[in-house]
Image (cartoon, rainbow, N blue to C red; front, side, top):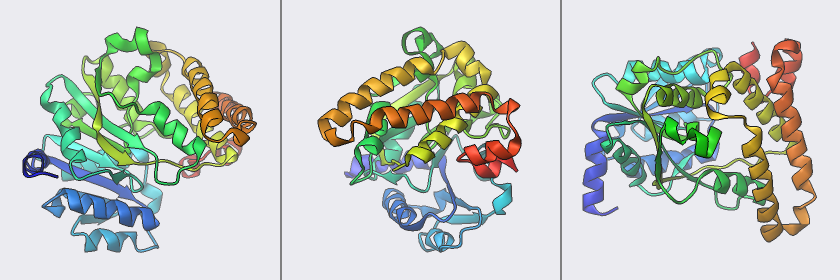
Length: 316
């Protein structure tokens, strides 16, 4: 990072705090911590919220100079924990940046590039570009490449007729929030199974704020899910879409985007791993079945929901 970019990044970071929830992050968290440490001159701007790691992830945070706070594992909730952290650790700051433990900054300038989205006073939240981890398989890589393009953009509610549900896309794997906008929209919800970032995006857009996508702010982040894990993940998405009806009401159904995804995946796998083409319909059938079951979760036994879900702790 050149001196000017470093100066801009540190000036913006002085107005923000970076928050990372961690639980047994393993080697990927060690890699992520090193990348964060290379990006900040003052490691105390980084707050790690550890919910009971047993693999030394908390020690990685301490050794990196980050501020560490421990919480009981059963108290963790995607939305509630982030809201608690924003309220407790961001006093006097303008912005909060959230990273997940497995998102590795792709260059020390990424945080500054993300925060520069707020030079537009109408932007309430912004998120960065994700690229696949090194060695990612075709299915793992495609989902990231499909969702994160190489062109930055700023979206408002007026874009809903054009791009539908994608208007409200936002990922807390690498996202930043204008704290005044976050507070005005009620903060992160605690009742959702996941998608606290999506919920905030919907509220901000409907309140007149914009969402920024910063293609120059990059992290490496992807998951090598099995077919069963994909089905559970999409069950949780179905639950979310039932719990957050305003998402589909104002921004359109998810199925249209799903069809576009399947078409794109067929082309990508054909070009990169043609022998795995037979898995495309199998994987997507599993996802769709999981999603439809998630949409009807209110009529399913709680024990079955827990078995079908990737976020099993939620069903306690």
